[in-house]
Length: 64
Image (cartoon, rainbow, N blue to C red):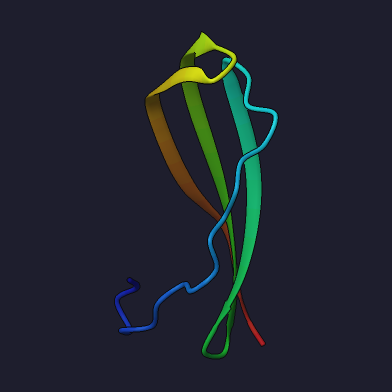
């Protein structure tokens, strides 16, 4: 949930996860267009993977 009380209702799916995977997301919340980069670090292989680290960074906020 964001500080203005709005919620992101979409489920974001990561496919083809490797040891380090980056994915960019874009959300429109109120009058703002927000871009976020998520970086996952995982260990394991095939269907036995464990997330060992995750970061999210806002890369852009633009008023519509």
